[in-house]
Amino acid sequence: MAQREVKLCLLGDSGVGKSSIVVRFVTDTFRQSLESTIGASFMTKRLNVDGTTYVFQIWDTAGQEKYRSLAPMYYRGSAAAIIVYDVTRETSFQSVKMWIQELKKNGSPNIVLAIAGNKNDLDDLREIDQKDAKEYADQIGAIFVETSALTALNVPELFMSIAKKLPSEDP
Ligand code: GDP
Ligand code: MG
Image (cartoon, rainbow, N blue to C red; front, side, top):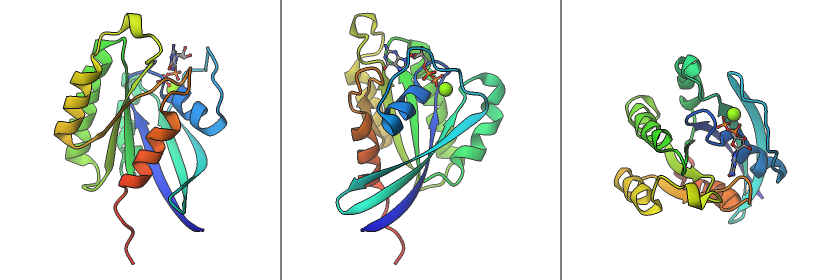
């Protein structure tokens, strides 16, 4: 089977569930208390999509302000970026817009962008309408899904959509 390596990074506020999404995708588990990420952590995961094995090389960054200046090291050269917010936290959605602006300015021009509204399981605490977030994502040409690292909703699907949207490789 054809194999393709995909460098990918996750960005977004601290506590939105970036590490939990990665752990769910890579090991299909969930832990209530993950240690908060220091700097960034790296994991790989293989996924078969339409006859190709995608080897995701995943950089999970820390969301804290003090690490903000490190982000370009991870998104530069990334084929895809997942910007995560927490559907129960309005401020985390504002940060998505900030990241998108930064990526449009400084990221690679053909980077595949995906926005993930995580913690979909906490619907009664919701502050961000799915419809509004989807509209924003459509405007900027990004993939959009709501996810839950807790219930596993849409987690593999998120990576599958990214694989399908990657520009075809040079011959
Ligand atoms: P990060 O700082 O963005 O990497 O966030 P973490 O993955 O460390 O998660 C922060 C907190 O949110 C932890 O207590 C997680 O257990 C919790 N969490 C992450 N994803 C979900 C989710 O989908 N649903 C719920 N209810 N909690 C989640
Ligand atoms: Mg983390």
